[in-house]
Image 1 (cartoon, rainbow, N blue to C red):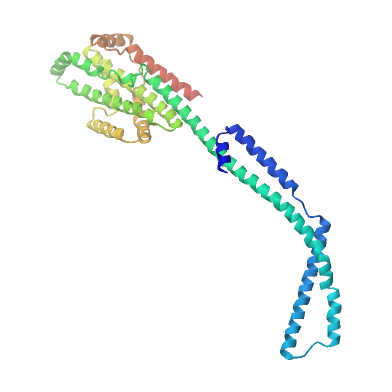
Image 2: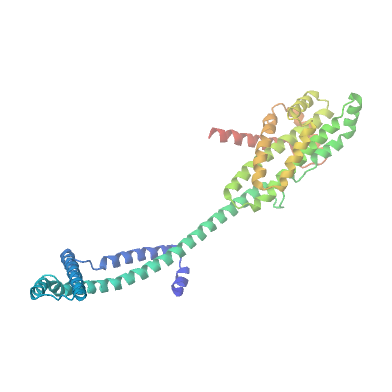
Length: 367
């Protein structure tokens, strides 16, 4: 059996399936070879069995009479003995004569079928062994296929998010652009604060903190992709991270425009953006508390993080995704601001990424 098991373990799945089919056919053929009792023999055997029963009853009655005779001391009369002998002619004697014609064929058939049953049992054991090995190999092959598909999907997603292969999410590699522009325009902002007696700086710091929290969340999602063991979860993460990148681009673009419009004295654009952010309660201290609460999720599992990010991001996207207010002039001014700090971020690239995701969403709704 051990030798057979080793041999079967070396066979491919297709060969094992063929072996399994052969076992089924062999077992069926052996079952067909078993000798069946003819109908006439079954009837004859039934009659003989009735004879056995009658003989048993007759013998029991005889034994009872003998016991009574022993206890009472009254022996059988000659007439009773003759009656017993007469009765035995039609009970015990015919049964004894017919018994060999029932027992010998039965013994011969059972002996023949016993050897066939042994072969069937051996084939059945072999069938069970092959089936267990086949099921194990099929499960291993299925898991291997799933692992391969999972690995390919994760590699594809990581390559899309990290085009230069440096193990960092491309979108957040340059993470201090907003603060650089803020510092670059600090003098002008301070002058406006003094002349208008308003604290613009705190507004931009709040925006900067939010952008930082989004970068942390995106980094957390990106870093956990390699640890995902479920391919469906990879598709889910891909969907979520694309949406979060879209949200980050929206927020970064509009935050940058807010600084640019303020220092360029474009108060219409500035006020428009201020009201948008105000509707999100971003200037409220509670908003900072919400951000901190979300950042705590970085220590959580990816499923919980995904669920919370989905709810958290929807309101922000709904409030910010209309960028039609941005004029060509606004974009040129912002582009110059970015050039002044040698930023690799391009306004047109951000707008293109935003439009691409919006088209993707629109197409998904039409399907």
